[in-house]
Image 1 (cartoon, helix red, strand yellow):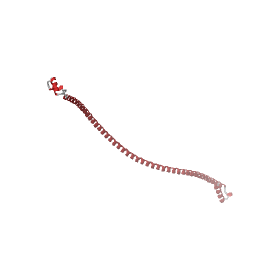
Image 2 (cartoon, helix red, strand yellow):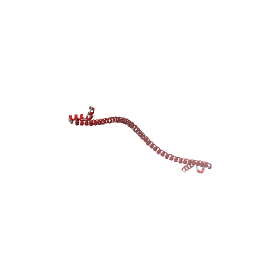
Image 3 (cartoon, one colour):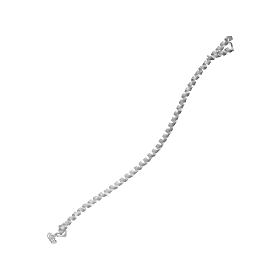
Image 4 (tube, helix red, strand yellow):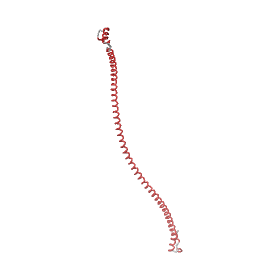
Length: 198
């Protein structure tokens, strides 16, 4: 409306309104309508452009915020990746150390098994040696028992023999000669039998 009044004022300043031809006025009016239509279209386009600019501005703010969030998450992910790498490194070092300890423990177990096997072998050999010694001692004991029994028998026979000797030694020789002749002992063997020496 302001532009329309301004154009009308300019036209009237050059051509008096009372002296204008009707045809020229109509043409000017048509041009004015076209100009106003174009102006309205431009205003509409300007409004749409302003709305699009506002929309783009809002999108820009949104994407800037989204970009900042993505950058922050990216930074956090980098830190997490760094932490995971460090943890992996630590776990790898722990695994190497644990593997070393396991190998050492395995070696110790193998050495212990060898020592146990050697000890068992020594114990078996010692047991066999002791068993052999026991058998020898049992045989010796058996021999000693037999010798003791034989000694006891010999001692018994010797005591009986000695008692007989003592008995005959107490008899008077004349009585002994008398007994000898009375028994008519023909030989020494019978005499020995009489004396109980057989």
